[in-house]
Amino acid sequence: MILSPERRKILTARALDYQANLAEAEEFLLERGISRELAELFGLGFVAPGGEFANRLSIPYTTPGGVVQIKYRCTNGFHHEGPKHVHDDCPKYLYEAGTGTHLFNAQVLIHAADLVV
Image 1 (cartoon, helix red, strand yellow):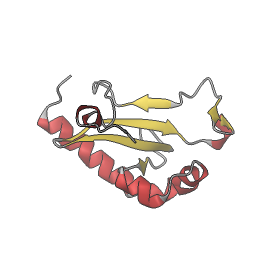
Image 2 (cartoon, one colour):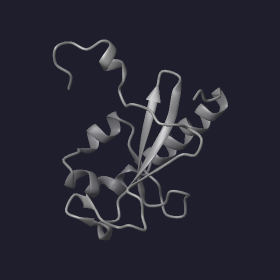
Image 3 (cartoon, one colour):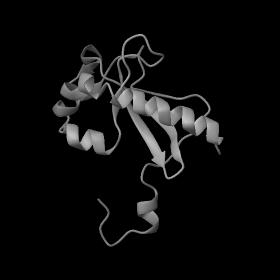
Image 4 (cartoon, helix red, strand yellow):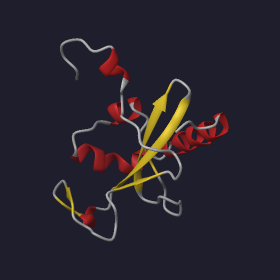
């Protein structure tokens, strides 16, 4: 699926808005061994209450042309038993409508050395 330049701009703007709320997800990330610095490197963010994907971690898929997908991860502690998501009425992940599915960091497969991290 090819997104229009306008749709990419919209997704990129959303990702930047969510990144401004990253502090809200810091505890959730630290419990999973993800530092704030690493979260910032990958553009992770948090959707504030009241949004379409409220109270979820935002995980953008960014290409040189901009953001082409945002995945939203449930962060509600009551929906987890340890690291396992167990709440049937709340999907672990939600996606932006009409953006398709992408393999994260696919270019590493093309230009990989003997070890891929």
